[in-house]
Amino acid sequence: MPVKKKSVSVKKKVVKRKEIKPVKAKKVLPPKKKEREDVEVPDKKKVAGQQYTLVRGMRDILPKDEDKWFSLQHVAEDIARAYGFGYIETPIVESANLFIRSVGKGTDIVDKEMYVFDDRDGNKVALRPELTASVCRAYINHGMHNQVQPVKLWYSGPMFRHDRPQAGRYREFHQFDCESFGVHDPVIDAELIAVGYNFFRDLGINVEVQINSIGNLEDRQRYLVELTGFLRSRRGQLSEESKKRLLKNPLRVLDSKEPEDQAVLEDAPQILDWLSDESKSFFMKTLEYLDEMSIPYVLNSRLVRGLDYYTDTVFEFFVPDNTEGGQSALGGGGRYNLLVEQLGGVPTPACGFAIGIERVMIEMERQKKEGMIGRKDTQKLPVFFAQLGEQARRRTLFLLEEMRRENTTVHFNLAKTSLKAQLEIANKLGATHTVIIGQKEVQDGTAIIRDMESGIQEIVDQRKLAGELKKLRRIDVVSG
Ligand code: HAM
Image 1 (cartoon, helix red, strand yellow):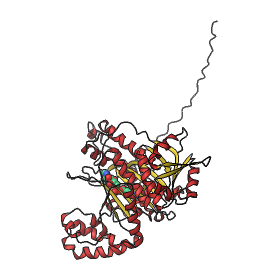
Image 2 (cartoon, helix red, strand yellow):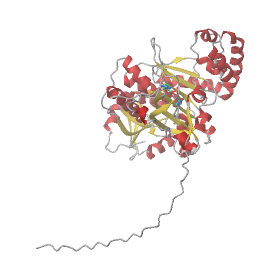
Image 3 (cartoon, protein in one colour):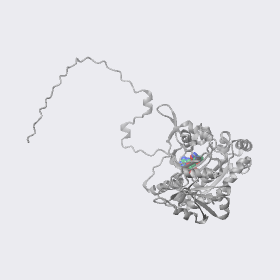
Image 4 (cartoon, protein in one colour):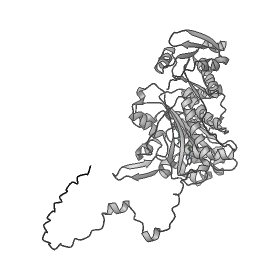
């Protein structure tokens, strides 16, 4: 069929010509001062052919490092999950005051290294120099004190410090960070040290754990009077940097690596002698738990860490045989019982650590560790581990480590002591079975496996426990 053509009528618009009036020449004003400050317009002639280089202290991650980079991320994720840490991500930009208040005025990070600027709304913001303060802020903002404690959180991401760049020290670097909130118990400190230590072990890297206690606030104030008096009496022998530190933050003099300071520090009073009975016993218990998990450590009475928020336990992961100079601290952390409250939250004890990913990569190269491709096949069983009494708790620590070595992980809450509270958590997590270790089981070398639905209990040899539990693996693995 022939297609009828539509007739399209085009109406012509009649545009009336306006009378053209002479326009007054407008004065062209320069852009407002504020706008001009923000945007620097490059001179086109000058930039033609110019090459842009990296900003000082920043690095690219290239395909040649891909395997190491991803194996580090995977090991971090696997281990954090195995110990029951939940993932958190916080923004790179935070209010500058958050860090000034927590890391502290007088610390190198706040006084010299923080990237601080006014944003376009005139707010003083900072690129985060560390993560602990941000995670505390998030804990408070999201009311996490209402959840079952401890609340365990982990993260891995970039941090920024405007430090003097050198091997292993960058202005943008990455940290693997774990924080545990809500429980004041040395078992938490020991667990965090175990997480860090086992992270290195899983990568095949040899590290030395150095540990100290800086006591509670009152212990430290009494010690500071003593230390300051001592350092003043030997002021003439101190390095110029330590003289400055003596005025601003005397505790940091203990950190100095200068030979002249080392000679003075030989005779300095030791903080461990100034600890209250409570802090001393807390520290001793932390060490005992580490022994229980066969984690070797070295006591370092001069370890104080460069951030203000620590109380009681402080620790660092060091390269043991670092003869080539460079940065030997691969990671560090400690307890910070007052920080959440200082930042406006309810009083919440806490403890955590962070490991510097770039430094670990350098160490992997030095120790000729290639990194692995692919993930560890870790099974999370729908099983909860409950313990009754101090000895059982230690035994549980040991058994949990043993199970983790066999790539089997279970749920646990070492902060709870009553069986009722632990069984409630087991139910909440949807565990199908609970392993119970009490005083009798410690002595007999046995464990009770309780079916949570039927209540039927079975007694097994502790040496066969991992194998028995693996048999219970169901498709519906619970998370938590
Ligand atoms: P930090 O000792 O300041 O602690 O940093 C932890 C680790 O980050 C260091 O041991 C190091 O490996 C790495 N790191 C620090 N600065 C640089 C840099 N400029 N370049 C490369 N790597 C670097 C903290 O940040 C605390 N927030 C740790 C913590 C968590 N405490 C309790 N919870």
